[in-house]
Image (cartoon, rainbow, N blue to C red):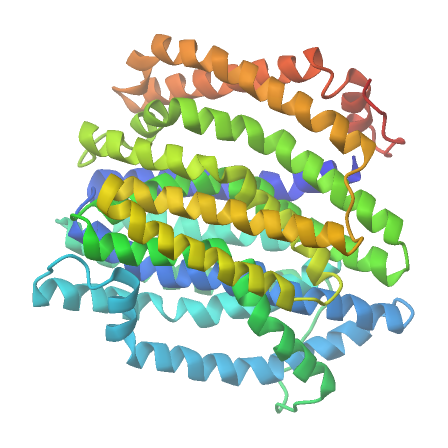
Length: 527
């Protein structure tokens, strides 16, 4: 119940951010559509997005938080010991990030070519336009890295909400650009979006600086000095980046291959489908990972191995409770969801059908994407970042082989399906290794609840299959009509799933009462 309440705090802010992101994407679909300008911006946005996932949500948290908590624990709970370590880390990382960002600006042309696969027969002026967009967004890499350092400190101090609120500012910046500063054509509008990405990064950094000051955290920029702790941090960061970002690496491979082998618009279909797929992933997976890593690392640091295993069991239970209904909904109702959100302006019914097919393929791997976020803290909390990277590389290889096999046969839905299968392989390797090492064992409560959750999700899906046909007319038309239709679809699905969970005794009224209490009660077992 503690975990659920913490996720409610982080997840609520993440939900606001993701809803704003959907609004942003809806405006982008209206003003830019699925065109070369859209593809060019999405390629330029892919690099900062991937770097955020690899570094901010993955590598830095995985390496920094356990070391920060260990320093605090060794000093008898004295937070200043962790802050001294954070200052030393900042002193070394800041110049490295400056040099890296400058190098990426210089190498914008080959970077854009690699990210897009060269596109599919663009004109020289089109490709130069795409390179320009990449140069505009590249400074975000430095900004989000500094945000990650400050956010890692606040997460370690239990102030999760400050870091969780930061992405809202990026989305507000991009919405403002689309609404107030869009040009007279798709190319000018995409350019305004690229500028908004870097502006959003500046706003996020300022927000985290204010949050740190309010928490009494004041870091000074010192001369860099590489000591044993900093060496250990750098040693952990590199493999953690690949391990935590396997899904993003797979999406990068898929985007590049789609850009080089498929018609214009294919990258946009995959992007819009992935944006919806990212809604539960951000709300549940990233939220749980944010909470689990510092929680498990504190428990292990205190010698409470049993508590750490229980925390991970409850994390998996909570993740699948929230993920299974989203998976079924995306499989059954992908097209009406896409139609209600994106089909207006330059986004056509054909675009809706193509994007809906891609979303259904992504949904196959949705539980795996989220379980990767839940299981990897079991390695990172023990300062093992190498094992996840080995599995990530296997996942990337599987994704590459499947893309080569599937793109010529099933077109633009090949990359999402390949990404989903690769994620399933990754999560299977993570789970089996944790179990083999004795670091994780599914307890009786988890084993009892998972089949019941699956049955409840399937019952919800059967009802949605028929409800979808009744709401078709409400997913087109005016903004308010579409909002009503989607609200009815999502609301009825959520209510049906809740009823099915109680009917199958996946959860009981006692669980709901415990969740609402101010002080957590001992967890109840379902019969």
